[in-house]
Image 1: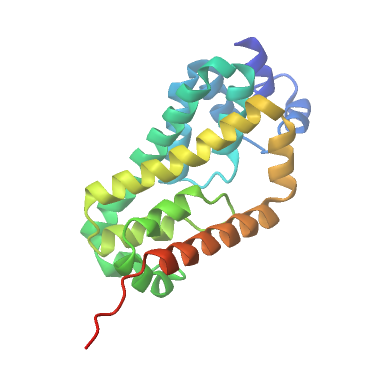
Image 2: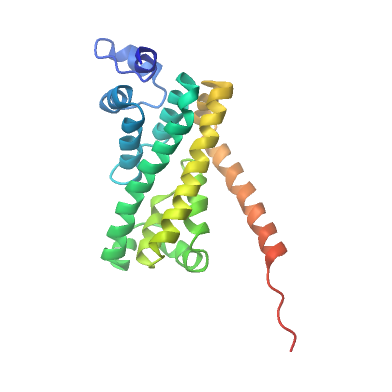
Length: 217
């Protein structure tokens, strides 16, 4: 695991070199944790990112780096990342469900998602679960809890969304290497907008194709 340790930039003797090698500016303690524990450390990282901390692109970068270093274990890394994110989000969901709307309304943009969540319980967390930063995510997790979306629906939607996102990243990392992560960092806003646009088009198409005809009077 020495190669992965170097790539994850845990280098106490050369902090400047570590910063240069780490475009994600990953905390040293987190790099050391993942380098030592592998998939279990990745579980912890995504749990923290989805609950008490905000670590934009770091979880994605870890998935891609570990998958590139050990392609045979890519499904394991992606699965652990998805489970860690799910665990962190369940914690937020339960807090929001218990805290009620007062907790939810402290977050900017809350009113905009209320109607969407009530109409589309599955999609309202599945789609944000796929989208990369800087797209806001936790506000949708909070909304699912506040508006009493069934836990089973929440868990299924979130796990499917996160697993799909991490597996796509893992496959790309195995095939194209570090270039994928560099591209995502440099074009994160444009990439996020492109993904949103594609999903919006697919959503509209699905609504048109599967909408129920109005009964004739």
